[in-house]
Image 1 (cartoon, rainbow, N blue to C red):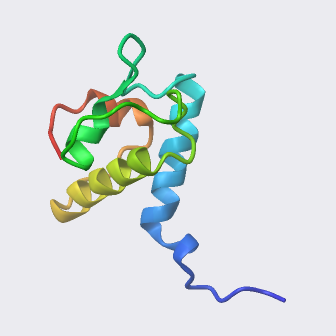
Image 2: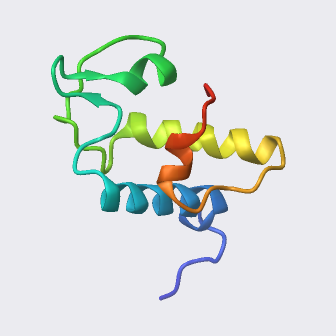
Image 3: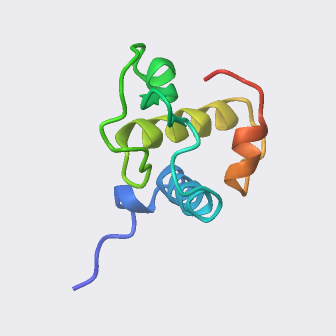
Length: 98
C-alpha cells in the first residue's frame, strides 16, 4: 500500500524542519538554546512567551518548542521571499527575532 503524495510529512516546511534538525544534530550534542547552568530553555520565551526549565534535559530531537521555532523561521524566510538556509549554522548566525 502506498501513501497519498500530498501528506503533511511531504510538505516543504516539514522537510526543511527535518533537514535543520538533522543538521543541528551533527553540530550540537545538546540544544544550542539550552542553558546548562540554570537548565532554562532560551527558546521558550520566544516561542511560548514564558520562561521555564527544559524538561528534556537539553535534547532537542523531537522537542516541540525547537520544532515550533524552526517552523517560525521557515515562515519568516518564505514570507519575505528569501532563500532558505541549507544548514542549521546559517539559522543560528542570523540576527533576528522570530
